[in-house]
Length: 94
Image (tube, rainbow, N blue to C red; front, side):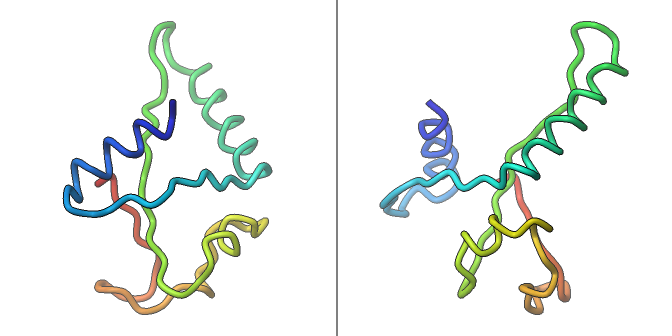
Protein backbone atom coordinates (compact mmCIF):
# COMPACT_ATOMS: atom_id res chain seq x y z
CA UNK A 1 0.00 0.00 0.00
CA UNK A 2 2.97 2.32 0.45
CA UNK A 3 3.39 2.64 -3.32
CA UNK A 4 -0.12 4.08 -3.61
CA UNK A 5 0.81 6.93 -1.27
CA UNK A 6 3.99 7.61 -3.25
CA UNK A 7 2.04 7.66 -6.52
CA UNK A 8 -0.55 10.03 -5.00
CA UNK A 9 2.13 12.46 -3.76
CA UNK A 10 3.98 12.44 -7.07
CA UNK A 11 0.79 13.03 -9.03
CA UNK A 12 -0.12 15.95 -6.75
CA UNK A 13 3.19 17.74 -7.32
CA UNK A 14 3.98 16.62 -10.89
CA UNK A 15 0.62 15.93 -12.56
CA UNK A 16 2.07 15.63 -16.08
CA UNK A 17 4.92 13.27 -15.19
CA UNK A 18 4.70 9.69 -16.41
CA UNK A 19 5.38 7.28 -13.58
CA UNK A 20 7.32 4.29 -14.92
CA UNK A 21 8.08 2.51 -11.66
CA UNK A 22 8.45 2.82 -7.92
CA UNK A 23 11.24 1.11 -6.02
CA UNK A 24 11.81 1.12 -2.30
CA UNK A 25 15.51 1.25 -1.56
CA UNK A 26 16.38 1.09 2.10
CA UNK A 27 19.61 0.89 4.05
CA UNK A 28 18.82 -1.66 6.81
CA UNK A 29 21.36 -0.25 9.28
CA UNK A 30 20.19 3.32 8.89
CA UNK A 31 16.55 2.24 9.05
CA UNK A 32 17.21 0.42 12.35
CA UNK A 33 18.96 3.52 13.71
CA UNK A 34 16.04 5.73 12.65
CA UNK A 35 13.51 3.38 14.30
CA UNK A 36 15.55 3.32 17.50
CA UNK A 37 15.70 7.13 17.66
CA UNK A 38 12.01 7.46 16.77
CA UNK A 39 11.04 5.02 19.53
CA UNK A 40 13.28 6.80 22.04
CA UNK A 41 11.62 10.13 21.19
CA UNK A 42 8.16 8.55 21.48
CA UNK A 43 9.00 7.23 24.96
CA UNK A 44 9.71 10.80 26.09
CA UNK A 45 6.35 12.11 24.87
CA UNK A 46 3.07 11.78 26.72
CA UNK A 47 0.92 8.77 25.85
CA UNK A 48 -0.98 9.16 22.61
CA UNK A 49 1.59 11.56 21.14
CA UNK A 50 4.10 10.35 18.59
CA UNK A 51 7.06 12.08 16.97
CA UNK A 52 6.19 13.71 13.65
CA UNK A 53 7.68 11.69 10.81
CA UNK A 54 7.59 13.01 7.24
CA UNK A 55 8.60 11.52 3.93
CA UNK A 56 11.08 13.58 1.96
CA UNK A 57 12.19 13.45 -1.66
CA UNK A 58 15.77 13.48 -2.89
CA UNK A 59 16.69 13.60 -6.55
CA UNK A 60 19.91 12.49 -8.18
CA UNK A 61 21.34 13.20 -11.61
CA UNK A 62 24.21 10.87 -12.39
CA UNK A 63 24.78 9.00 -9.15
CA UNK A 64 23.01 5.65 -9.02
CA UNK A 65 20.46 5.84 -6.15
CA UNK A 66 21.60 2.39 -4.99
CA UNK A 67 25.11 3.76 -4.45
CA UNK A 68 23.67 6.44 -2.18
CA UNK A 69 21.30 4.18 -0.24
CA UNK A 70 23.62 1.21 0.21
CA UNK A 71 26.41 3.26 1.73
CA UNK A 72 26.77 2.64 5.46
CA UNK A 73 27.17 6.39 6.00
CA UNK A 74 23.88 7.19 4.27
CA UNK A 75 23.86 10.35 2.18
CA UNK A 76 27.48 11.34 1.58
CA UNK A 77 28.48 14.93 0.87
CA UNK A 78 31.28 13.63 -1.40
CA UNK A 79 28.64 12.60 -3.96
CA UNK A 80 27.06 16.06 -3.83
CA UNK A 81 27.57 18.76 -6.41
CA UNK A 82 27.05 22.47 -6.11
CA UNK A 83 23.32 23.10 -5.79
CA UNK A 84 21.23 26.23 -5.97
CA UNK A 85 22.29 27.25 -2.44
CA UNK A 86 25.79 25.76 -2.50
CA UNK A 87 27.21 22.29 -2.05
CA UNK A 88 24.98 20.13 0.06
CA UNK A 89 22.09 17.71 0.06
CA UNK A 90 18.62 19.01 -0.52
CA UNK A 91 15.37 17.37 0.51
CA UNK A 92 11.79 18.47 0.09
CA UNK A 93 8.38 17.33 1.30
CA UNK A 94 6.91 18.05 -2.16
